[in-house]
Amino acid sequence: MAIPTSDPIALVGFDADDTLWRSQDYFDAAQLAFEQIVGGYVDLRDARVAERLYEVEKGNLALFGYGVKGMTLSMVEAAVAITDARISATDLHRIVGLGKELLRHPVELLPGMREAVAAIAADYPIVLITKGDLFHQEAKVEQCGLAHLFRRIEIVSEKDPATYARVLEEFQLPASRFVMIGNSLRSDIAPVLALGGWGIHMPYHLTWAHEAEAEVASDAPRLLRVDAAQALPGALREIAGRAAAWLTQP
Amino acid sequence: MAIPTSDPIALVGFDADDTLWRSQDYFDAAQLAFEQIVGGYVDLRDARVAERLYEVEKGNLALFGYGVKGMTLSMVEAAVAITDARISATDLHRIVGLGKELLRHPVELLPGMREAVAAIAADYPIVLITKGDLFHQEAKVEQCGLAHLFRRIEIVSEKDPATYARVLEEFQLPASRFVMIGNSLRSDIAPVLALGGWGIHMPYHLTWAHEAEAEVASDAPRLLRVDAAQALPGALREIAGRAAAWLTQP
Image (cartoon, rainbow over all chains, first blue to last red; front, side, top):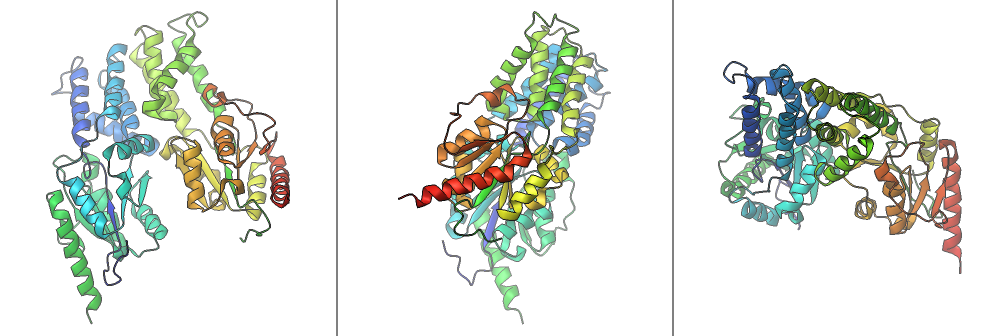
């Protein structure tokens, strides 16, 4: 498709987990099952199970990166620590099984997202930018049924300004012509705004503690917030209008 | 650099693990430590420990993909199965620790490889094509000190003909102008030969059972074999000469 040269927006990026499809629900369910298993050994009210699991996960991030397999290894480590190594091999095996279930969960697009992605892809080149296990993300992209609409699928280990800058360099675009759509202020919005790009924040009802750790001023001038996929094409038109107005300001 | 249009070879790919740097040694050491831990519960001679671990790993490949984290989860599963769940939480935690050590092992280039890569990069654009955990491979690429020589770093989930075809499409090259250098017949050589490309097989003294599962005729006309990095530039010249001769045949 040819982007009208009058349109200052030339590329739209989508996050995947909890933007295109449901993800955190499955992680939360796995964590609940983890707590039930560990609860056979300790008093859940006293043992700060969720906090200690998050501490182990966060401590392992620099070694494991994001994704289900690293999270599962962290669950095994946390279970041993929380139970003072009293947990049985059978229960540790069940925890590994929780991770395997997570890797197998079906890909369920969020309401209205199929139509929103198709509508936006009719007007702009779109890219998918997602982080996590390469193998698992590829499997979900394949299952989601939207892969053919994306110019490029970028599975990255970290979503920071350097990563977005590399993607923009590959498309030979300044950040001011790029809009990123996602649920995470930390991973999808803040780094793109920092580069001078645009963001559409579509919060999901669940957020992993790690992704909530970001500060973005709610009145940031290049940020819009929408509550549902149906509002995405309109938000994009609003951004294109603002960007055009800025360009033509004397 | 400008490739002389008279040179039929236009791109050279390198594998990473056990081609650029030592890898299988660390996996084998981890497996030995695994056997010692499990050996506290079963008679290693009777329990077919190595075979059963490989069976678990192979059974999980379609869910985990390649890489240390999946291997570590498979080791935990195999240890529970092999010991009939008698293994202690402390020992299962030690097995997770083996995986974490693997992720931390230093990147040690194989003898002569730094010079061979530099020499080839002076004559041809080179790409790194490696499979496994995105996060771990990125860390190793960064540590190896050669990353700046590569036009592109491709971390992929599977090295099959479709993957190599995608890379060649990005460079807009036919396979006949591509040479892949690697230690694995299954992952580095067979798929490239199948596409009509060239291979330089540089066997490593250790090979994971999975990577040994490939059949390539040793007299395949577009395949050379070398025993050391020092021989790589010469092998490449030999291939360029053969390719040029084929092109000019009436």
